[in-house]
Length: 158
Image 1 (tube, rainbow, N blue to C red):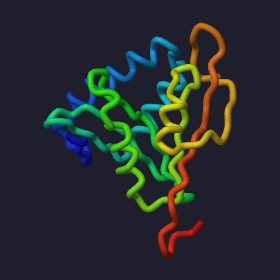
Image 2 (cartoon, rainbow, N blue to C red):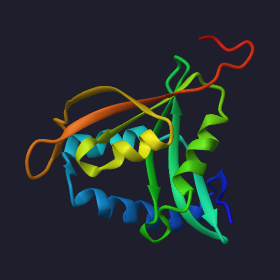
Image 3 (cartoon, helix red, strand yellow):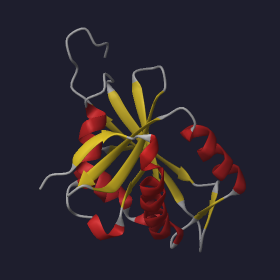
Image 4 (cartoon, one colour):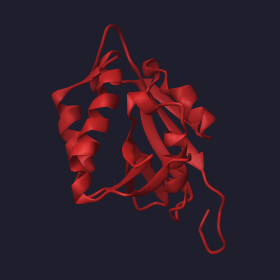
């Protein structure tokens, strides 16, 4: 069965927290954000649009979206519960984001998590890399900016 994506509802808060915790556990094996990065992430989440994905009636994926005013949709906080990975959940969440009226979707990830190839399989391309100064781990970490260009619809600026 394909994942079903819908806007988050207030009643989803506990399930979203569970999925966030599952995704965060995987990342914390590689890096930890600095206190400033944590505060910035909280500020970014305020007022964003949240989509969730369900499989067999269970909430198993979440993504946050924020338009930045220049025809780019920022995607962040994309997590899939560990028990439901490799079942098309991330792909369904990204596909739902692609339905928004933007020319591109942008995101940032840490290279050492192994997520860059996952996003590449979803159609994203790397547009920049730099040292990740707002995270700590065993050794240096690299922040990777990725972008997915969407097909232009009539009337949409390039």
